[in-house]
Length: 223
Image 1 (cartoon, one colour):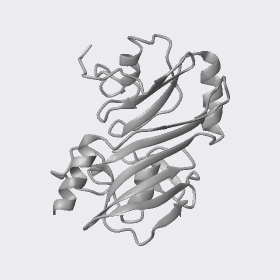
Image 2: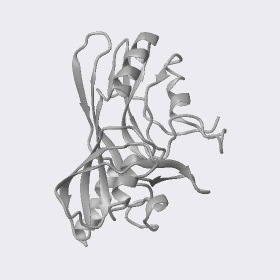
Image 3: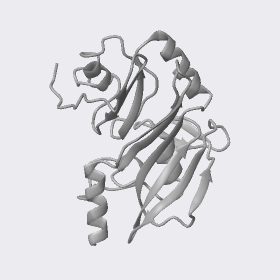
Image 4: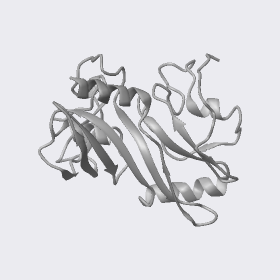
């Protein structure tokens, strides 16, 4: 197996749950086009052999993920995700200036389109998707946006922003060119709120922006 320098220190752990900070550049599950590449579940199962996937993040997206350690926890968490009980907040650096402070995007989406298997807006035949967007901070030609997805469609946040002329910095699949500000999509899962599957306690986990996004913002502010 190829090596990958991953910090296994959990954000939170008990008998039912494991919450981790996924680094950018690491797939959650095995990639079909590169089966030899390491992936997050493979690495975590070296320590937690029975760990079960509840949800996913894009390979380039960093941030919070929750995994189940028992079948009962897996079943309960999957129900929470299906019923949109779990609340997730992402943070994205976008190219351009939003013309709004808050906005609810409801473009319907179609998936796996074209040779690059992109997600595209198709308001006639697409699947419903909803994302609440809020401007956190504005810069010269850029902005930091909080995205709260109400549905869990593939590339939903990226496409909802791209459809508004606000591609995420570093997102070459959806509208931006190579940049020296950052070498990946500037999208981060910064907050995760759920109900504990056993204790029924409402739990909220948060994590700061990663170093590479902070550096990109610093460069933008410096002009």
